[in-house]
Length: 467
Image 1: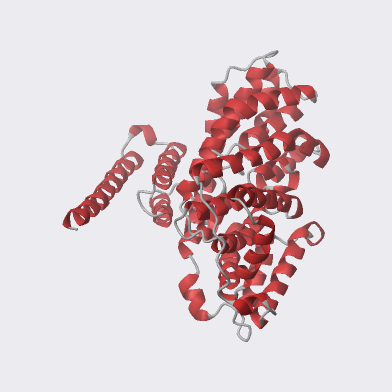
Image 2 (image 1 turned 45 degrees about the horizontal axis):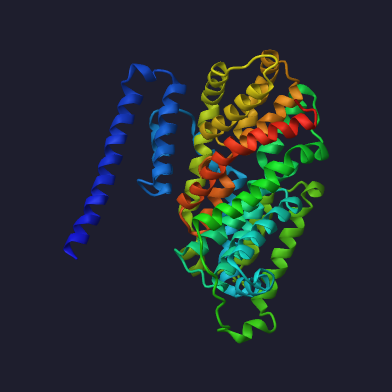
């Protein structure tokens, strides 16, 4: 017993020592180093520290975010409107709404009911459960244009499915179920034009800068077969490989829950159906998915309805998740505001072996460069950084601008680590599972993409006469 305590103490002490030494080094670099006299260089140092802390989990993610806020403001790397922009972003309110909805789905028993209904279709093997959830996530990508909205809606349902099959907290099966719905509704959606934010940023910038309209059908036919379908299959395979488990259907412990809906279940169902209807028809009313989620949360919190009461709200809302995502958005904002993203992308491109008549080398180089840029700036920023460079890239490679614009999709759809993609982070925070689990699948999927899918995709583009 004593040895175990000292072992834990030593581990915590070592972590604290590493954090302190890292902070001393960064503060010295920001304040005294001749290599960090420019604001972009200082922003790069702070961004690197923040990303390393998130990747290694030396301290909890929300503490790293708070540390970023503090250092960014103390060293005036950007104004508060940039550093704290995440708190005013739609993503934060989607998370807030999702947390309240998740509490309601669990406390009313509606989640358990949905889990039982879903189990009728998923009943059987672990493979059927995981592949069914990934398929459901992909189908929802066609119905709901907001990745955040899909994750917020589907994650609590996935938790109920995990409970139904007795996948308890910390089990591989529970992690697998949650990754199936979170990754399955986000990563394959890059092949569906309106289904992810980076796709739509690319559409907007292509129209404003080059007067090039990206059509839904052209985009789908070019990207969906490999970037969506094949990646969905790979996600299923990787989850089953890394997180194998055996489902056990629990005996019904609350028979009354299979009967009539309770008053709270009816109200919650009406709220969810209304939100889903508004999310699916946002092309008509143009209301952000975030405000739809916030409106749904307010209904559930209202006195007289009290599906999520004051006590549950104070105790169960995960404020750490909100701070963490605000930190991710703040880092991305600082990188773009200081010009660091554009500088890094330009330098990366300057190192590439580009040239006319080298289609495969040009394709691989630009795709990988946009993927690496996504690691440095987060995925939604890639089109903002790369689109203005497309004309100069066209001069260097002899490729048309429309082809170079589409190459960005190959790059920013290659998710190396979860912090690049706020919807993945949100889903993992809502689920209560560790980000390292998602990182493992994302990293191996990215490696398979680079060494297998990208070369195969090149020949697909050749066949379609895009190269």
